Image (cartoon, rainbow, N blue to C red):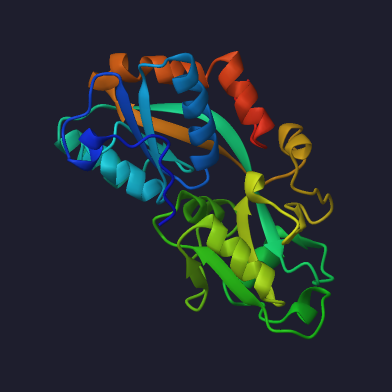
Length: 272
């Protein structure tokens, strides 16, 4: 599990209760970079504030919120019905805030000559119906499919948007974090995977995608904003209604002009 801690105090290591001016954020690795950066700036502006940020996946974050081991869950997919029912059974009223949007990039090894794929082709690849790159205009090479683990909101969103809620192929290789996807794809010539736009680097190649089979768009901030790139999703913070007053300063900051500018500079799409 990828974990980054902005500030870790003795009371946290000792398992003591968190002070009123301390907030714990846990969950989506996609949201992690902007959670880190906005928390760092928030603490710089508010010296008495203490914020810790930990990754691990959307499902992990929401579970931690339900277990009361985090104050805010960051998620790259909406809360599930079963999670809502668990919260209701526990007498918890969970609040949802969209803090940003993210484009999901389909990535391959830099040497791969394929430059674009339709949604139907992506569905065929990730469901195991298309197994060789020559079937989609590439070289004669076996396709190696990398995916996120099931607790990941990115896994859920890709399944919903690209696979139309059909199951992934059973032999896809599940990776615990986005960094692992990038590393694996960059080292495997026949690989394909998907990552949040902010994680794209020279180590991997992004593909243009079309949902109508005619209009292809590269994953970019501009194409996500103008809605020509189709794989775009909201990013969420969840928290308990009874903690609204405690989390309000941090929530207000991330949704402020300054917080949203940090999000934009980080390669994500502001909510406004």
